[in-house]
Length: 154
Picture 1 (cartoon, rainbow, N blue to C red):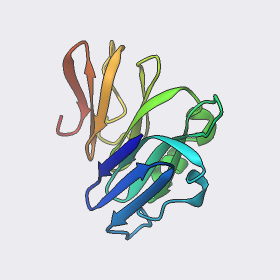
Picture 2: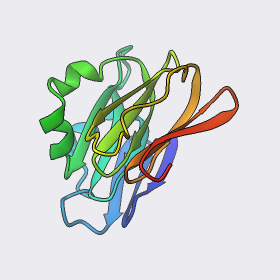
Picture 3: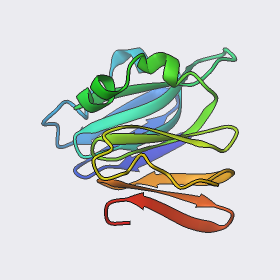
């Protein structure tokens, strides 16, 4: 699988088990942790100061896990036991400035992090969701053929 993503001022690509990032690196958002190089990358999402990848161990049937680098204090400070929260069969991730949303295989969304602008408060009846994306302080999803957004500047 080939993945190419762009953030505000940095980019990442993943191809054949090699993930690299380049661009502005003020918080270490382009320094890919060695721990993910031995894992299969399913999705990557980039924010302003951070990067996250949805990974699983190669050649094993396992739950996907979220690995983030750069300025990720907002995730780890506002969400306890991060690995347990993200060990479900996830398919897509969307990273905002200080929040993240995850789409799981049952096509439902879970959002974590800062909620100062209601960017975690998705509308009811959002399942099934086909796609997710996040902006600085808002999130959007494609569900039932309609785009629904929540948070600031929706």
